[in-house]
Image 1 (cartoon, rainbow over the protein chains, first blue to last red):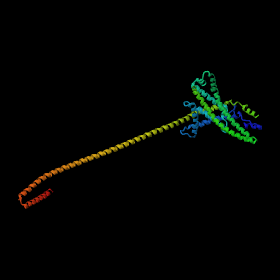
Image 2: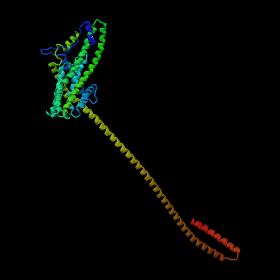
Image 3: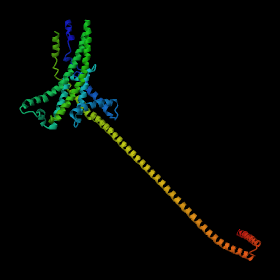
Image 4: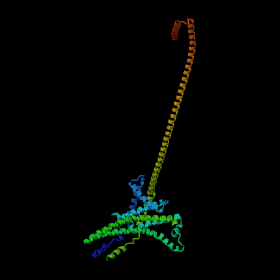
Length: 266
Length: 187
């Protein structure tokens, strides 16, 4: 804030980057909307990269894996065991591993874009992608619940057992709101907001450094080093959050699926 | 003034950050769907197949090793048993041979003793027979000799010492001659 407040005395006018700066001009404009953006290119690239990498890693299926296969198996084993098996449970988790696996690495790669110089644009700093993935997960776990328990699932999911009848009028609406209305919103916004905020901070630091370096005052020029140090720290934190959010999104997906599968035990 | 700029930028004229771009949503949906399909149809089955094969290979290897171990142990037991059997057998045979040898020796000794006894007996019998024969022949010869001598002595003058001495000498000479004759005849 000091770095931001200082220029005011010069009257130089520092304009911090805003939401608009997240929307880069389209690479290939067409009539409707914004045309084909960098964002879309990166999303397609992520799917192609992931598919190519994991197909290449899985194809040989050697008993003694090479480096590529080993890395692929580590990545797959992590999602399969630490998320799928541990959360959903031993018997029927295998059915949901493809979804969890695709989600985790799709989000991971699209987040990491934000930490790669030049690319530097996390896909989910635009809310659309987060909505899509959260909607897929939302429909999936409701589908699983209905398939497993029939329409009784909605009663199981909203009426907790062991609650006295006179509290039910309060509890049931809360359960409906928290499970069926708020859950998908928080699921998507958590991912979107962290990516947006992280990206904004990095952009802000970048433009702040640029602004300070171009000042006449030597002290202000020197202050850019402080901002740089802060920016590097924030960059590291962002990189951590990018991985963490991919994990959190996938973990929550697994928890929702598990909740739908075992709605009668909750 | 700057604060205003900041607020303006944040709240600004730009569309709400919560309003999605439908084209982007479409791209994310399609990209994710394609990725999911590939993962579901190819990547996961391939990894699972590898895992299953590896588990099987490791478990099969362990089972094989255990079997080999068991076989080796069984073979070792068998060899040990055979060794013990062979030792017992060898001891038995040695013992048998020893007792058999002792038996043979005893038999031989007994036989030899019997043979010796038989030979000794035979010798005794023969000696006795010869002695008997000698006694018989001596008796008859001594009798006839005595008779002859007596008749000679009686036939000469009994009171003439010289004469009787001559008779005895002559008799002895005759006897010697007879003995030489009989010896020459027997030879």
